[in-house]
Image (cartoon, rainbow, N blue to C red; front, side, top):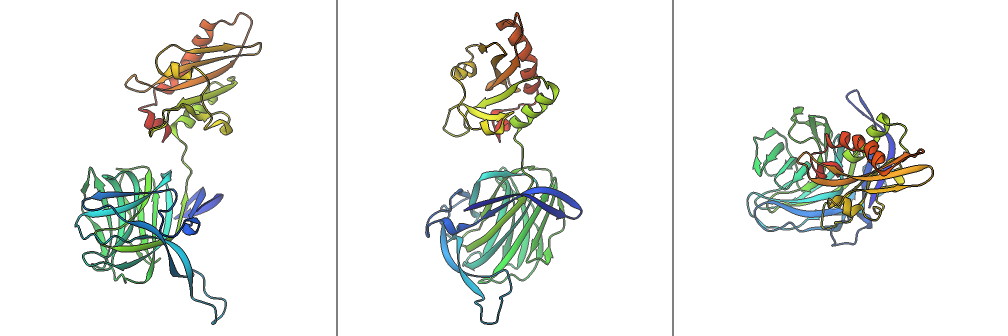
Length: 352
């Protein structure tokens, strides 16, 4: 379902970016099931959306090789098929496996039907169901529009009038770089460039409104891979303390999984591994962990956020020396951890 290509060169108005390309293909998902890696959520009122994978005739993006070649083929699409007419009802299908900052997104969509509304769009830089941006096309209203939603309140629209047919495939492109946001419909109709700093990063979602039945396919996202704060802390600490032999940060899961795992390391292959024994005690405020051999000394200390809460643990691996003691090992490691704490607001900020 997910294909990831690295090293792609993206050009956007003079902006060169060595980026990753994420291609989301629904073909590996069983028909009538929810696409893997996505979560159905509802913003506003009414019944939850009904999202499923369907097989649909989709025109090729390439010109046929010959007049006899088929113009369309059966493809897997993500479809919202609920017909709940509740106003201010916004079913969204959130992609859960990545958080995006700067990106260029393109998708094809088809507005199939709807009595109250006929809309399809993309929500992006999603913080939760009450805070996000979205761009949508309306076949009934003939508008291409950008909205910002903050604390569940939708701001003033930025829109242009444009005929949008139902029953036909269209292409939506969204570009975000820093505070700059652009949207283009069918490669030719663009909203004015927007400048908004409310949300810097977030997830993306397929979006519909009310009783709109809409299909989506060919979702591609070129993006600048985001480095989580924990990895940035490790990288910067190693620059400041180049003699360190190793550095790891352990933190619990953000869902219902309290297991401590490596979330950042000087060795990327270690990310995801379980934390060493007794690291839970460090996070619980029961001291620190110390170990020594003939060449190295290891200390695990708690990492506090701005409120003084223990949110993670840091393993510092250093060269040992004659006369090395537990006390001076902790003394050596403490400034390294303290320099990290100045940048940690919360465990969520640390690992997302």
